[in-house]
Image 1 (cartoon, helix red, strand yellow):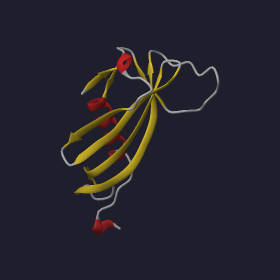
Image 2 (cartoon, helix red, strand yellow; image 1 turned 90 degrees about the horizontal axis):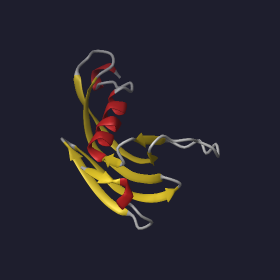
Image 3 (tube, one colour; image 1 turned 135 degrees about the horizontal axis):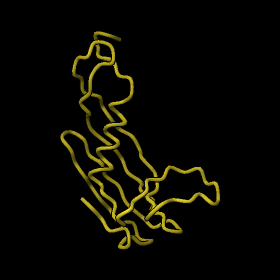
Image 4 (cartoon, one colour; image 1 turned 45 degrees about the vertical axis):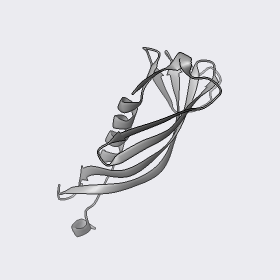
Length: 116
């Protein structure tokens, strides 16, 4: 699901994206100076591998996610130290953002029941 950033205003725009057994649900809202706030909840299960034996496992997820989407290159003039994803086509690709979150989860260390 792609959403044009210009259509996002001060009123939150709800979204929900699903992939296999995981749901990415939240809202987008204009923040300031070409920044869009994304607040969401990631719920469900992610298939990954045990970091020790390589067995396929499902890891439960229930986490809050918050970051900003910049319409173009982000210049941190005010040293805000915030998480920013840059969009160079003036769109928020929510499917791609979900896939990125899933890959971050997979890159973490996970153990199956036998290796704990």
